[in-house]
Length: 160
Image (cartoon, rainbow, N blue to C red; front, side):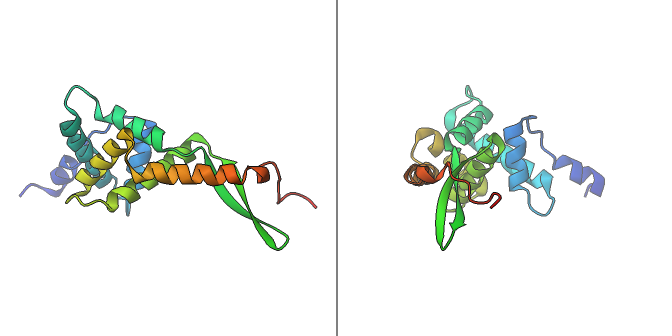
C-alpha cells in the first residue's frame, strides 16, 4: 500500500477555476472534506458528458442549469402589528446561485439512480430540458412574489 501522503494527493481532482463550480463544491462539502466534494462534482460531470456527448462541455451545461434554476426573489416574512406580511426581496447573484444549487442538490437526492453522481448529472440535464421539479419550485416562489408585490415597497423594520 502506498504511503499516506501519496494516497491523499491522488484523491484531489482538478476542477476548473470558476465561481459557479467553486460555489457548488463548497455547498457540497461536508466536514471540511473539499477533495471529496471536488471528486463528486468531477465524477458527476463525467457522467453528464457521457449523457450529452463529448462535443459539449458539461461545465457549461452546469452553469446554464444553475442560471435557469436561479430565482430572482425570495419571500421574507415580516410582522406588521398582529399580521405577518410576506415581502418579496430581490436576491444578489451569489444568493441566487446558492438557492439554485441547494434546490438542485435536494431534487437530486430524491431521484432513483444509484449513485449521487448519476442523480446530480440527471438533475442538471432535466433542468436544462425544463422537466425538473426545481423549475416548479422557482415558479412557485415567483408566483408568491407576484401575489405579494404590493408589500414590496413597504419597509417594516425602520425607525418609528
